[in-house]
Image (tube, rainbow, N blue to C red; front, side):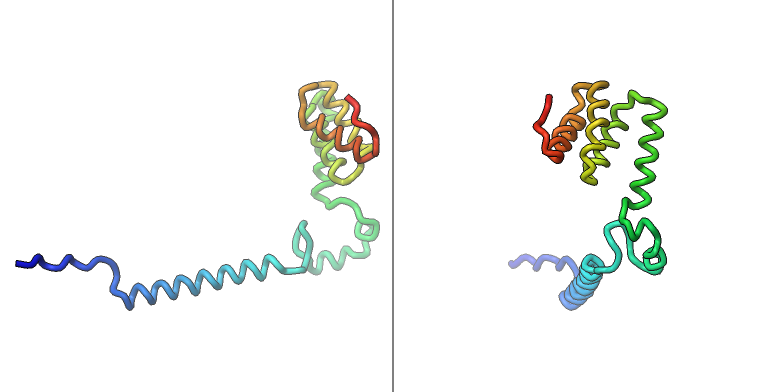
Length: 142
């Protein structure tokens, strides 16, 4: 006597294929949308371009360049922290980092030196100081 065939599991083939095709189509559409938005050439890394950027094109900051408002805000906040607590090694290092990333090496060095005077084991300040000195063409001083 033969055993009965095992019960079928899962969805019927036509339904499973239909669901798979629908899922694949949605996945392709979403991926395509991400690719299109990712390669969009409007705006900058700081935000989308639009009428507000065009209106500001005549301002002094747009003509002369300069950091974005968010960076200026961060600089002013760090300077306020340092004014409140001159021994804030973290704020000193972060301000040095901001100047370093904008290639203002001469402005970064004093902040790193102050941070290292407070905490000689501050690896970020040591690294930043060395990079700023290299940027200025100075030999790395210990």
